Amino acid sequence: MPEHHQLIIIGSGPAGLTAALYAARANLNPVVFEGVQPGGQLTITTEVENFPGFPKGIQGPELMELMREQAQRFGAKSIYKNVTKVDLSGKPFRLWSEEIEHTADSLIVATGATAKWLGIPSEKTYMGYGVSACATCDGFFFKGLEVVVVGGGDTAVEEATFLTKFATKVTIVHRRDQLRASKIMQEKAKENPRIAFAWDSVIEEIIGKDDHGKKAVTGIRLRNVKTGQESILKTDGVFMGIGHKPNTDLFVGQLEMDSVGYLVTKDRSTRTSVAGVFAAGDVADSVYRQAISAAGTGCMAAIDVERWLESRHA
Image (cartoon, rainbow, N blue to C red; front, top):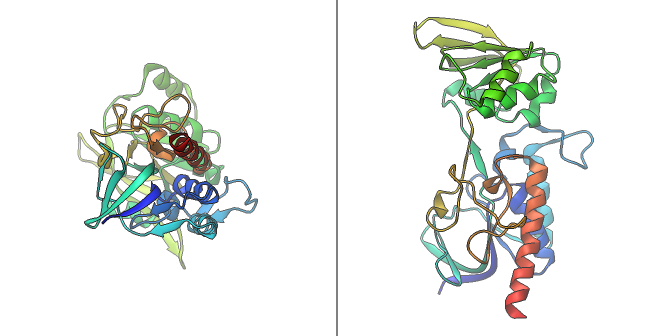
């Protein structure tokens, strides 16, 4: 017989662990499938300075460990495995992890979204040390410095425009000779004196230094896709503006999604298209993508679950 739970939470970022905390305090005995990278994207973030309650900042992994510890204090249980298959066609819901089946009365999906990266080795080397996929998270660290944004769509232009609040110069690196962003966004970027462009170019390598463990980006090696010519551009930071992919492959054909794959929630709640399934965090948020907003929707999802379960037994 599969192990049965009142509530299963898939995902262990700020959304999943906040949901676990609230659900545990409501005596729902939540089980959190944390996956093989517990803590989500914050585990690859160094300094977090914009999460309330930590005036001196906190390391991303430490913040997630504190959240986990708080949820477990009230009875949340963590399983450090991936969910590999789900069946939401009937009640109870069925989930599998490494061929082991679990069933649940309710489900919170907090699987997050993954930033799209270039896929070059040097990118991983300096991730969190000058390489970022979140301007609103990390822009402050580049006050008075020069940075690069990769991409040509609305995401890249929005990131670049935001970064001009801090950086003295923002160079948009795009593999084509014109932006794909909406016309109004293009005009806004081209009129901004702090934004420059490296057209027809791709990043071949992110260059940096490592001074006794203190890593820092110092530049990028660019290749012109039309001429093949390479050049070095000095920069203090590299921001990826090529979009995010919501981690929703498990739910294709089972939950309603938008054209990109983000889960669609109903009526200013965390309810999805299947009764008893709720979504929290970046998996349903293409706009804000912040740790604090993810945590807020985690709280909402737990409350929505509690009320939904109560209504079934009323």
